[in-house]
Image (cartoon, rainbow over all chains, first blue to last red):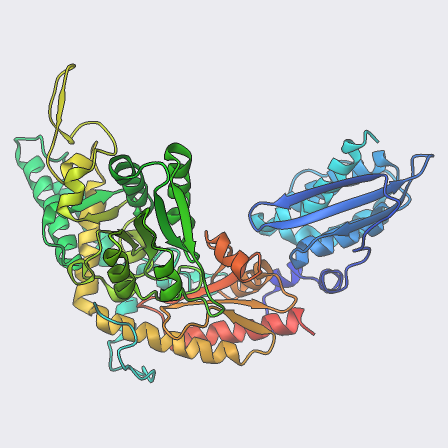
Length: 151
Length: 421
């Protein structure tokens, strides 16, 4: 393999795997929250659906739409990481992920180190400003979905 | 008009011109990118500049600069002479009948907006039709839509076939009794298709329809002869002609430009002004309100000198060779599909790959120093026609080499192993 290491940082094997075989890319019948958004720079679209139970716990997350490998992998990872979390924890993970992807200061995160490690696989995007939007598209959409329904 | 594919056999190992000597003229081509030599394949978006153009702009500011037209002093006269000389070069380059048929604008986009506003004001009424094609850049769509909102004109669109051509019959059929203007590109920026502009212009004129040709994507490859074409308007931009940004050209037939009202009001475009009445200046000053891009016009003249010296025939033939090579190399990649397969193309190859987003392709290419464009290329209707949101576009200029085509193909093979399994 002769590709430079910086590109391997961006397209790690896990990212490529989630890009090729995205988890939870499906329509969710029992959704309680949903939002759709678009990346104007490329026209990619993502739909995020969540099912939050009456105790306020995220039971299921799914996404839809066609997008690049980075956006697809990020959405796929997000759907796995958010299950079992509360909306407050989801927002906290959003803040942490956003800082990680955009190169800001990461806020402290209580008891979600394993999740942080998984999301860190996308931190390579910080060297490619155009791709930060790809990586955060599903997360912004998830946040909009939570706010849409006043979770 | 000089054709691109004038019987040239794509063997291109020398003969046409010394590409390495030409590359030595372009300082930026010697700048490494991501630790590798730059392979610049985005000339359709903007061409890189030879040292002769950069030096023309620099030395004009260093030695000859002042505002034009009004000064009675040496430098103003000198700057005016150099600005006028640039207009003469454009006149010769386009083979216009008169120098005053050449109007300097900010860009090809501004030139089209000028015609839409001014020709529209003088000649278009509610219910009149403007005919464009499905291959247009947004800059030859949106100005007409704005005019539609303002004046209630209708916009007709000649359809694109499966290989990316605009069939002449379909175009001709849409020339109706209310059609006043046909505005179309000479080369598709998204697909590279060369349109049969000469018969299209004849068909339009036979129906009493005026014609605007968008030459932004064509002039650097095949030049233009506006008298032979007999088009009524022709526009192009400096930066795609290896010249500076911020300068464009509108050619218009004298009688039409004379009959059109000014586009903008201001200094330089008047004969006399009082609060009761203003008399407009004659052509071309009538359409050049305000201090123009003087240094950029001078440097555009240097770009035209550069291309004329190298020879547009030879440039076109060199690029046709590269396009032939690239088409053969990319066609051999199984997961890759080329969009726009018209027999008559110029210097652009647009493609998609199974299961790989164009942005990911461009990212991998960039890591190898290969600069291509990924997106809708300001031609979303073309993307819609072919059912894709975006493509990757590689485009070739006079300085590209067959080794760079190889670098593109090898980088795409890497994309295939990375994403397609």
